[in-house]
Image 1 (cartoon, rainbow, N blue to C red):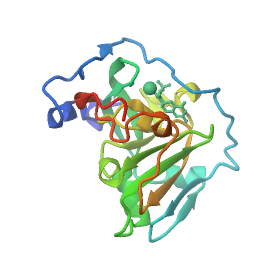
Image 2: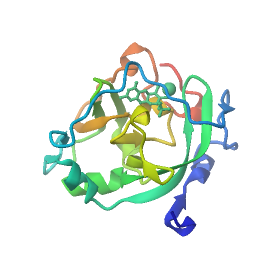
Image 3: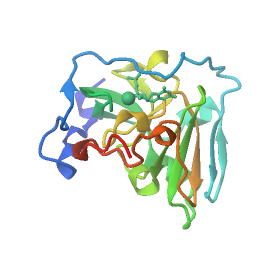
Image 4: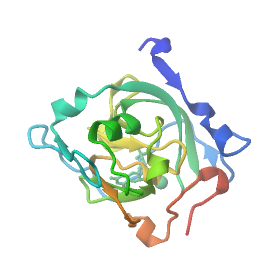
Length: 201
Ligand SMILES: Nc1nc2c(c(=O)[nH]1)N[C@H]1C(S)=C(S)[C@@H](COP(=O)(O)O)O[C@H]1N2
Ligand SMILES: [Mo]
């Protein structure tokens, strides 16, 4: 990919802290795989990506329809709550702002739940989701996103610990009251700001 097509958002840490590497993290060279279970199967013909809840136009995208949404490539850092960070990942996909604009968020929406093919869920406040740097990514470093990293489609949240980025994502629900996702029900932070070390709640 042409360098000029990549938007570098690795400087977003300045919004949250002084150092690119958040406190208590160590940088790793390779991109580890961390999943609670196995890599789920997906069927491109039957796969649907559902956006529902407090939205003006609930949508159920086929794979082709989702791929037709405007997309971009960003260079991002990735911070796992277990203590490793990897820098300069190039993800290609649809930004959350693009997706939310496509469905129209209702005025009483305050929170978002992400759903995934492996049964994983994770939640964030709407204002933490409605950012250009939150990507629904299908590409990684110029190739299709590897299946173990969440292909065909995953969320990446460079401003949050990476458990906020659902791999194998297949749905998003806009909520009028907060609900807790898989790790959030098990004591992990809802807000998950790495520069404030919000690991547990
Ligand atoms: N569906 C799903 N998404 C998930 C997970 C998971 O187990 N299932 N693990 C989370 C955690 S804790 C991290 S650190 C990242 C790991 O992404 P990676 O395996 O691509 O490094 O995915 C997050 N998203
Ligand atoms: Mo993680």
